[in-house]
Length: 401
Length: 201
Image (cartoon, rainbow over all chains, first blue to last red):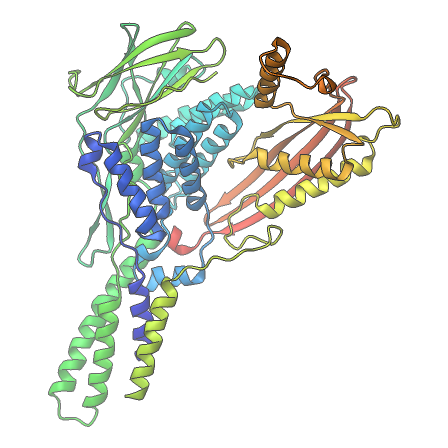
């Protein structure tokens, strides 16, 4: 009995704890503050959540224009997220103790987003094969869901893998990816994903000498639900931003098109098996708590000869009930966007002034978010740029040949 | 009372032990305890050793003319797989192995990287213009290459439910840069099987 108590105590003592990301600073564009937060967490925080912090840090570095570091950190995080190897101790700890004691590897949509950023950075550095490898790994991660019918709906990754295949001279594979991008888009929309105002990017996937990828809004968050906190409830966070309009040398080249709805991606997949275990733990916790109450009541109140034994068992059950933790693991990659948009434009080679204006639901310009960039379109290939609907961003331009 | 004390001490020890970290040096050629269905240091090391040994055994890079060394360079390793791979680590390992095993008396290994070409051009221009001094004995032409070594990494993944298998095929080719003849080719393969734990699903 005492030994069991000791084991449970051990499991709970090591359970991970992740403080909330300072999202108000993030949304105000105070990137140094948020970078410091992730730096501190990586140094002193829960090591089982290191991939979570690395992703957050890499995002900040990407927004600050520190692309080399961002790529390194996304890749480090991706290696953890893609590794299925789990020690039996970790599995036992997550099943009997707190689920958040396990190494954070993210949900399928979080793995897909890690792959998206990694691939985008490899593209920016001109490594098209590794960019394509990253996009392919994201497609596979998206297919990791337990739900058999929600596996091929990350259209963005198919489209990007197709574009990288063209750059590698693999034209037949590119056509396959483009066809799958359209299927993925149709599948997602038919299952409840938000619909963009146009599908022209996926309909003409090869077009454009300038590619602008835009993270819009703030992604969903996971919260505990259910009487024992055993459910992970995904809650979207509202965003005023509906799309981004791009201007090249003062003339509009169009509005961005929605390619990934992360609110949909986060709520339609993942975690089914673990949810069953958590449900079982919640029932066991309740049952042992009730059993303990009955036995303790009888043990303390009764006159029978076995009252000492009942009290001892009751105390044991009470300890088990107290230390059994059924709470869902609600660690979330909080700084993800709620959607990823893209704009492609045929722009003459050379240097241009690009302005991006973020617009609300009624087409109104949202103040404080507009950004002006100097961009360069190469003679061959395409220029690729990354934007985010955050105020006060100072970023370094990257030119892709 | 004694039993309780021992249990408490054991519990405390368990708490401390379970939260500790362990760092230790391990052999790069040994299986990676971290796991993961990806090419590991063991594969990179084995691959480089096998390829360089086989190239040497084929005798292609041995010149029959003692006055003239065979020269070659390594261009690219194209990654067609679904894993981001640091290709430089594989190529550098092979280049080092070939250079060390054949020796400078046998072969000239040319560095044809973009960075190297830029540095050479810039330094040569500075020397020729007299902006910096130069060693006349070292003056010469940029080396031409007799052969180029290149490769591709491909994979085949099968995923069903909680099971995943990944098969890697890394192919290397040595091409004669005069005749375009493929004079040597070899491959390295590795396969991994993973089962997802119930806590990851």
